[in-house]
Image 1 (cartoon, one colour):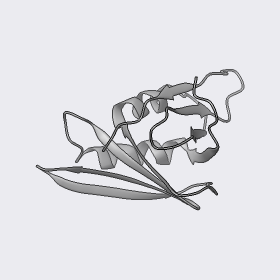
Image 2 (cartoon, rainbow, N blue to C red):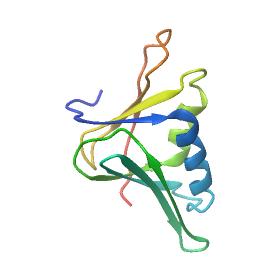
Image 3 (cartoon, one colour):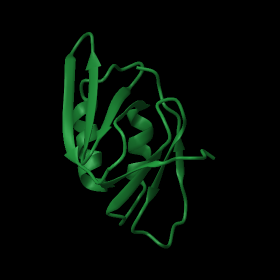
Length: 122
């Protein structure tokens, strides 16, 4: 399990899922990479493809840490978000650009679990 994650971002599950799906339409089909750029009070989701161009979307988010940019396979993020059920909020926990991140539901006391996702270099 990842340790020393000191960067936490809280997101609305529905808006996060929708934003990833919209941006991922233009992601490279082989890598499925999306870049998450965190800054105070916001999260930018970005992807690009040599064939199709680029897409980005900005979400309001509860984040107060230092700026951070990290890449993930969007399908892994959507897999987690798709099984959350009734949980309305999720928390993404990060350490740095090269360490594994954790996702977990915030509202659902019935399920105490975490989802570990490895970053990609983009």
